[in-house]
Image 1 (cartoon, rainbow, N blue to C red):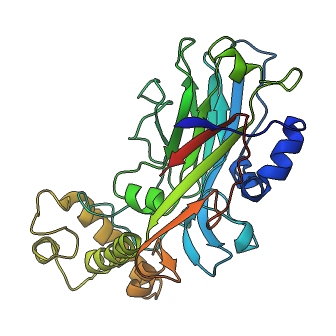
Image 2: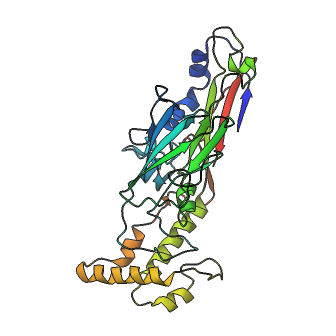
Image 3: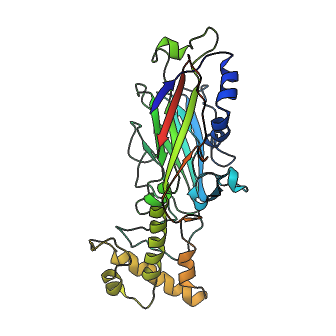
Length: 339
């Protein structure tokens, strides 16, 4: 969503932003991406114009100034956890553009597999990209949720934005069946902006209230609602299922009858036997060739660790409780994604 609040308009737009919005804009830089996940300037030398972005999905260790820290999956890992964030860069496009996103999966390939699990947490090392709000194709190489990008693999998405696409504020996140809740719920989200063509907005917003000031300034806010208890439960559930699935003392029947890889009492198509058998054969061969701890291998796949075990934790642009001071008699446009 987007909305506007007032300011007094004294001084230019850049001075206004620097003085009034500095606390948020310091965090706003995280929405621009880093050396791994970023967007290049829009290329208008070709028709239709092209927007090129790269997203690197990897393990992320991030921390906040109030002492909270977490190990999760996302798009912007850094040496300094205070500079890291699971959020992706903001993607800005115009109606009629061609958007190209190269997704690079840099998660570690696990030593054990849970590929036969269906209606429970699984495939936590596999990812993809899904958008919300764009009117685009749902087949490869566009917005297909059936795309699976394995560890070490890349995938080139191509989205053709219709020329009459409505401007707006949208978002994207991973949507691989089995790991969506862990990846998106762990903070792997990003904003998409479809810009307003000339003449779309009222003149006082498009051109600025004051001569020579240009358009009304914008503030982008990505609000991460981290439901820590759910993240903990999902991570622990994945590990529990992994250990049972790869327990060589359990056969397919005993695994299927257990509660390890299902929610509640439902057991409807929870594990595909042919895939389980392939995984079991590969596991036995791996154990014959290499001595490794299966339980530890499952522990290594855990997708969430944090300094907190419960409650909800909210971040704005990767920061804790940033403040914004709004003066009177002017306009500021806010774009907000709450994920």
